[in-house]
Length: 140
Image 1: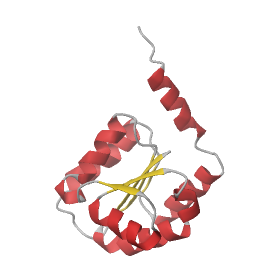
Image 2: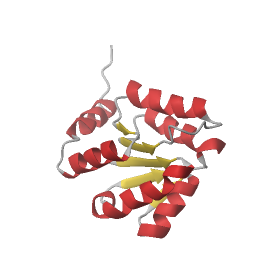
Image 3: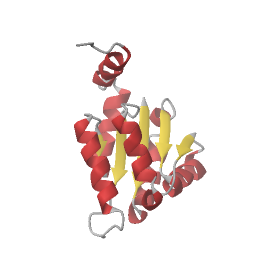
Image 4: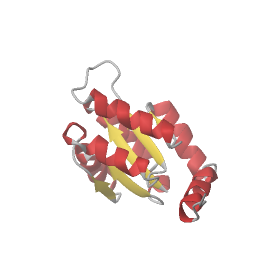
């Protein structure tokens, strides 16, 4: 599965702890992240992470584009709900796209942990169905 890891500045230490704790699970999947978040995860865990631009510089939109093409299966976006973000419209667009394309999205550590444990237990099979539909489109 393809997993996006994103965190606002005040949440970066938390996403690094999450990636460290769930490194064995994450290592089995293709990881993507916005710039600084990805580098911090790489430095702390040694995991292979494809890095996009920083969120405010378009990284959130790059991940959103993958979501819109059904090329992202899970998003962990640890947001800082108490700090205004200059790229808030991009953040909202990414969340909206996750809903539109039915991509599981965690915006806090509790939900992230549930999703990663579910992934480890094989409870994300519905994403395989989505990919099967993409490779076998119905022609009307």
